[in-house]
Image (tube, rainbow, N blue to C red; front, side):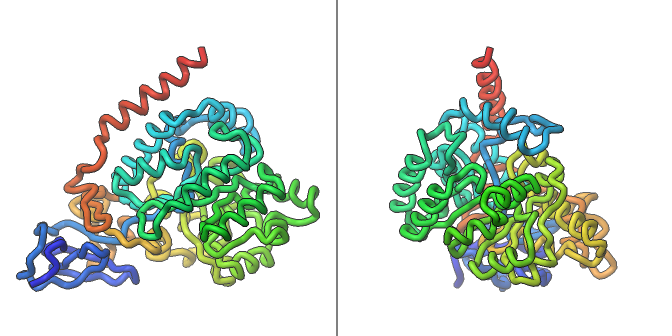
Length: 419
């Protein structure tokens, strides 16, 4: 007897959500749960789990997926305001749904290859990205950008909100792809736009996604204009709703952090992006933990982070920068960082232990997560909703070679169009 939709891994290592290690034969059930296997259950697949480590899959809580179109050294050396105004916005003015499809497809392939099953995205033509992730078997919170500038996909913010209204109205809570309202920032959204977005989130029970207090310049300009800091200003507009995603949230005061906690906000730590763009600071985890804010990790876009979508690398950097910034080597251990990177996951990633990077296993055979986070490993299998979207080192839902070929051709086509 048993769940004939389950998969058995024999002689394996499974680390559960609490960080507890389990050795032996296990069943991965189609509903995302797991149990110990007796060895006699009817299963859809029986796998030799020797030299494999099973963990919850990684979650990426702030992305601009189609930015895979931009080379990872794109505009390298620019501060944020120049990076946006001289490199990103002029490039994105010519973005098309086909470019977004190709960029999102490449991003999905990279997510799967590196063990991530979810992305909270913010990019143009959200329905295109949603379809790509759906076809790839991934989960997503796909935010359609809303701002009063730099919107190649819409004439104005009202038009962008109308599109999102339709997407939110037609989705089911059971869909793996959910849509969100991605107001860009306080400096690209008027008070009216921010209020309209928040009202739409209230009406459709949708989530908001916004860049908040990413740089000192943003904070200073907001205070000069409104007399308030960004979180204070957004709160004065009754902007926040439970589950609002605030990316970066670096340059904030403790009273602002308490405000985020009161509203049930999710703050996203994006260390590689903050460091590449030299923002001068990253999210201060001890203050957020003290206030009880839900903190997740995100890579940001490939053009701003320089590190692509590798969440193991992002989690490693998060652990190091928190210790460095707070002069505390005990802060954010490998297990803490990995739990933050996988928090809320319903899916499973299976890693190759037969790798020099995963050795030594330690005196008590207890170094699996530490090795994985600090050294990296190959993702062999990725199970989402009981389906293997990657198995034995091969992605099953996307042809990787086709994805990168289309990416190369799209980039070349874009630059040919500028000549």
